[in-house]
Image (cartoon, rainbow, N blue to C red; front, side):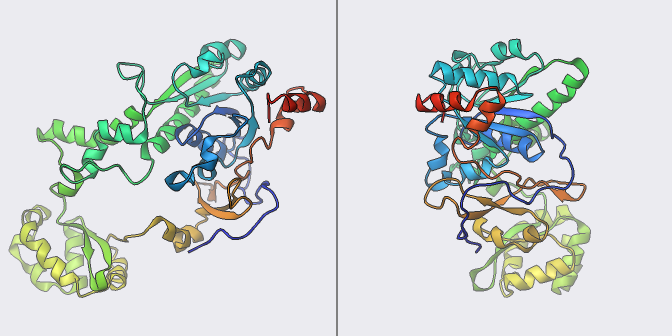
Length: 413
C-alpha cells in the first residue's frame, strides 16, 4: 500500500495542474465552513479554478485535528484553498471578514441557522455591500418544519430512508461514506454555478440553499417512485427481489469474494459459454431474465457451488475477457495502488498540513472529471492555519504593520 513517508519543508503550490485556464478561473469564493458539507462545495469550485479563501477561527478548523474516521476530513476537502484565520468575536477581525466577503463572487457557509446573521455575514447584510454576490447556505434542512433541528449525515440517513434501504431488515445501517455531506456540498456547488450563469443575464446575485435531508431524500427517490409505480414498498437492498438473476457477491476459492453479474439475456448466454455451463444455457426454464429471477431459489445455490472451485483472479480474468460485469471487493486503502486510478491520474500528491504527519506526502482522490482530457489537479496544497492571512489582508489595503498589530491583538492569525 502506498505510504505517507516523504517530507516537505512547508506546504507549497503543487507543480501538477491542469493545462490551460480552468473554467472558474478569475472567480473568488469565500467560505465560512467546517466539517465536510461546506468544505466540499469550496473544494469543487476550487478544483474548477476558482480562488477559494477559507475563513477559519484563530484556533483553526477543528477538523484539522480530528481522530479516527475524521482524520482525513481536512486534507481531503481543503485542497486548492487559501487560509485566513479571523476571530469573528473581535470587532476588528469581524471587519476583515466583512471586507473579504464583500469582495467575493460566491460566499459559502454551513453553520447553524442564525450564526452568520449574528455576525452580519448573512446574505441580507452582504448583498447590500455586493448586489452581485452568490450566497450558498449548506444546512440540515430547507426552510420548513424541520429547519430548527440539528442534522448530521447519520441523522438524515436514518430519517430519510437510506439507512433502512442499506441495512438488512430490522438493522438500519448508515452508508460507508459521508454521502450526504459530500453530495450536499456538490449540490451547493451546482447551485452556485447555476446562479453565476443567471447573474450573467440579470446582473444580480442570489441566495442558494442546499440541505442534507433533501439531498438524502433525492438519493432514495428511486425507491419512492418504485412504490408509486408498483404499490409495493421497496425492500432493503440486502433483502430485495433482484431485477437480475446473476447480480451477487460470491465467496470462492480460499474464501475470497468477488461480485459477478449478468444483467441481460445476451450476457447470460455469454456467461454460460465462458464458464462451460452448457446445461444451464439449454435449460428451458432459464431462457429469459425473468425466468432466471423466478428460479433464483434453486439457481443461486447451484451457481455458488459451481463458482466456488475458482479463484477470484480466475473469475475476474474470464469475466473481463468476455465483457461481463465483475468487481473485486476492495478496501479503500487498496485503491491507492489501483492501476487504473494511477494510470489515469485519478490520484494526486498532497502535503499534510497538520498533526504528527505534517509535512509528509499523502495521495488524495481528484474530482471524477476530465476536461479536454485533463484531470483537475492540486494547484494549492491544503493550507496551514492562517497561511495566507497577511497576503490577503494586504490585498485589502492593510499595511504590514496593521496586520502585525491585529495578530498581536488576537484578532487575526
